[in-house]
Amino acid sequence: MTKVSWFGCARSGCRGPLAMPRGAIADGTARCRACGAMFPVLAGVPILVPAPAHWMAAHRDAILATLVEHDAATPRAVAVVDAFADAARDAEPARFGDDWVADEDAAFALALPPGERALDVVERLVGPRPGVVLELGCGDGGVAARLAARTRRLVVADLSLRAVLRARRRAAGAAAVVLDADAPCLAPASFDTIVAANLVDVIDRPDELIAAAAAALRPGGALVLSTPQPGLGAPDDDPAVLVAMLGRAGLDVDEVVEAAPWPRVHGPRYAQLYACWVGVARKRARRRARAAR
Ligand SMILES: C[S@@+](CC[C@H](N)C(=O)[O-])C[C@H]1O[C@@H](n2cnc3c(N)ncnc32)[C@H](O)[C@@H]1O
Ligand SMILES: [Zn+2]
Image (cartoon, rainbow, N blue to C red):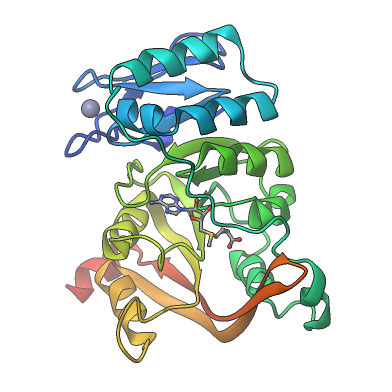
């Protein structure tokens, strides 16, 4: 079950502490103790997005289909979906922006040297004892499945409910949360390791995500990133952009692997091969952070 103390209220500017209903509930409502905002909980997954009614109304069909796919469409879950969706009836219907392929490691990936693919490097940089781990933008759970055996505390997060339920199924024992990486609601000093594989280049405000991740790490904690666009939009795609962003957030880059292949097989006639920057950056211990100011 997801510990809500790892997260704060997702309403813009709040970040107050959250309360889950008593007992081991799978479907219901979490509430912010500071502002009173309510957030849906479906199949044990808190939906911590800034506008949960709008999110629910926009994705209603995708949510119900996903709950059915995961045998989780209980009458209570459907009532929670309806109650939130009815509060924002004017939202345009949308599918989840799912952006992963069924098996990121399949097919022509086998022709690449084992251990060198981007997700292999992510796995190596996470290290053998990563403590409490949050994976942001977990997609289909390829990374989570690799990390599950090394930690008893793994939380998978994505804007897509389908993603987190699939990742949770692959990484047995993981907790799951839906959140928007462009409005991250992570509680301070909650995690030892945060992983974001191929996420920072698809969101609007990577600098805010990195700052929020740095605050959510315990001192000495590690942020492991991979991205095919370390320049984050800079014309020459210069990795210095990402490294500078990490530095501003109080994170020192420890190790980098350039051009790690990230194969994505979309179908028998369509595959992509990206070259990723993969790196681990550590949060400065408090005394060093002060001296660096
Ligand atoms: C390219 S996929 C990477 C998936 C996985 N980490 C991997 O490397 O195989 C990007 C993931 O980020 C998620 N995503 C996109 N925008 C997001 C946002 N604003 N907040 C949270 N997740 C988001 C997508 O749903 C998708 O699962
Ligand atoms: Zn609040």
